[in-house]
Image 1 (spheres, rainbow, N blue to C red):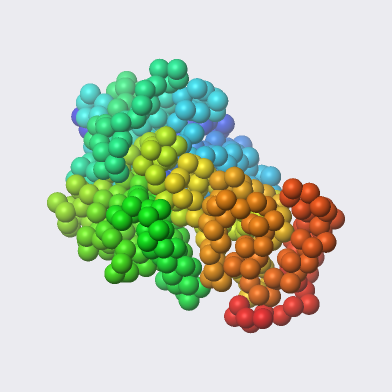
Image 2: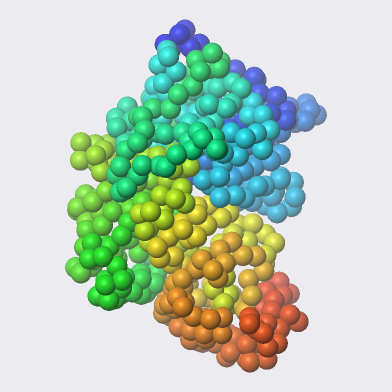
Length: 502
């Protein structure tokens, strides 16, 4: 049997084509549009090979994280030797932190050029989910674009997963444009979030397609927790800040395009923006289209959105598909090289809102590591938006684990976004506007406005006793809180907090 002259093969047959040590690029940006049945078959093959005493591991590329099958099922079978550019699976995370898997954490817009220039070596296989592939090589992708157009172009061999569950009308949102290599690049002609510059399909050389595997699985997207009281307080601070900026004419009265990172805090901020009577209808230029954005768009509070994936739960996706005539003209899905492109972000004046693990008193942000050593997920797109935005906002609860951890620390042992790019810091305690402030001014306003009261005295004492300099630090104590956490299970072992109250 065949589909448009391409042979239909089973997922098991596809997995048998892949050899130990191969680099396999999968579609998917978050679980949205991720390959499903072939990676699961690869995991089962790895189990079988390992049972026989044979080595079988592959190098894994995706657009970003890719959900349970790629980041967990493959890892559970010890089938991953190398991973890039982002991950979010607990099993894989543990293997990375034990140095069992090599992990390359990188800015997401850099992935396509890195592949094109051969810095990752040869891409042996691309496994890409689509709703259709034509005989002349047009590939209609599903709920994400990500890096799939690049993988289709540069992989030696291609396997297409035709997903019968996904709607053919998703192609109406796709706007696919692949950048030519330097020095032959020209300006990207995107002047507002809904500008379209490309095609509704990706392109592959039909000769490279070695088989089509049929699938009927939905994206598996976990429900986000509803924002708690801390999340609501953070959202209130952000909304009030944006309203004040508009009142002072530092923002236009129709705002600027917004970007929001993934998670319940970002979802809560978007919902708060949409429900506030004084916030005008707005547009977004972001990397993911999230659940909160469906309701905002349906209410016509969100007028349009550019992203690279529909990172939404199944019932929200059904709402979008059932009302596709309404949503399709208002959503543009682009390759991640374009959705996260620094030049477009700066041209549009994007307001970037991302979350942090911890922030130090000078405004440096750690988004990816615990204790500066153990990876959580990765930098993702936060660096691209933070560095190039009109306003860069970072949000985090001031404490975690019942107060045993402070999110405001003297020095971050790992830094993803530095003081030169971070403008606004927000916790449930308050908002610190760092624009135009020198290091000591930044330290004082972050401690006063954002640190939890249980940690303020410690942080004030730290800067009081630090060595004099442009940036004041005590190198014998700058990681004392982190050392306490490792040794005693709490940053301030003698201080007890309950539900965030000292």
